[in-house]
Image 1 (cartoon, one colour):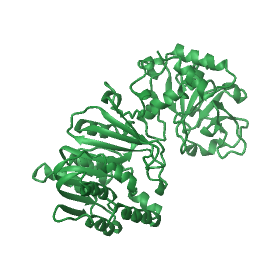
Image 2: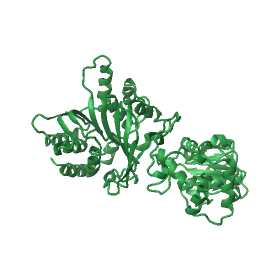
Image 3: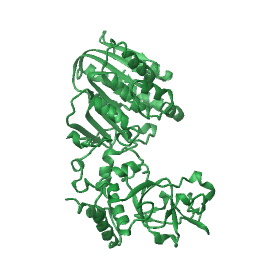
Image 4: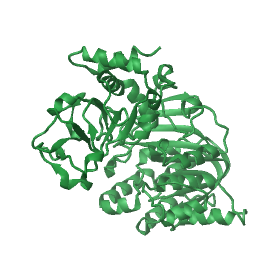
Length: 494
């Protein structure tokens, strides 16, 4: 069976498979161009290959790997393949795909109709007492993307193997790493979300302690890697080497899975994981200008400036009985992302689906902030927005003398101890956060559509005097363009 035939099968199954089933399994079949690119990342090697394809689907990834072998680009004398697939409906397609690559006894495919996480965890536990089973030399993976609960059977199984994570995709990759022989090569397409945030820190530590990162490929468009399944997720393709000595990392980018505009460059590892970073965030610089830190801001964490950043405390469904469509006596303004207008706030909005006000009373008082100047950042970016960070200034004069203001949970708020900021500081923060330089820095480590408080705390900031200077400069401008903002922030760089 040719890869083109595998691709036709994939497209047909993708159309026929209900979205609910795809979501329940967390698995989306790999498009042929992506599979070929992933297989192409493996270095040329000889000898005996023991290949793992966990979550194999119809065998798109295995087929791409075996096609390289059949063409002579991979010079293995023999390949033993374990292809795990939990979906009974895909097993006949998987078997058909692999059977097309049999040549003599050189390929020995083993289709395993089992849950990979449970089977691999058991194998690792057994290995404590029986180390005779051979380890894999290669793995090619498109693991399922699905959150796992703290008490689920997957979480318990992974913990028994010494793996702590919150999502199946990370569990698959960690298990593959654990099952690799020294020097083993792993290529996987996975969400970029593991690169930052506290929840994936144990997984990052697991990877970085056991593997060397050799290559990272980033798709610039979030909806292109699995476009046939309408998946909106920022994905990367990563190549890891078990027990490898870490050196420079090759970073490549393309807009989509055609790879027609592929660009590639090498970066020193200290540009990927910063020295002294206890959280071990993984940065993905996509151009020369994004290499390393900005020296001007290296020493200014937001907390050192005395400024706090918090998630908006008003969770609307918990306070539904106190919300009002429009302001009235006894209410104060309630701000949502929909109130963003340019670099400021437009309030109230008539005909809007979200309420504009919240009653001020004993039940709501603790969730409100004194009216004042604040810098607010949207927690979520939508679809293919050019910017991940979108900031605006809350001006107290816009609220008709209101004494308090509510910030809904989809906003992040910069404040001084739950009170407003000096106007120049609030406006300086907005200018800084809306700059292309800062958006680029943020994108190096954040693959989420979500902007978390912990991510904003990780950014390096100008000093208070520099923020004040930015804010005063913005006040003198009647309207700010992106070019104006970028030039103002660049002027701070030494």
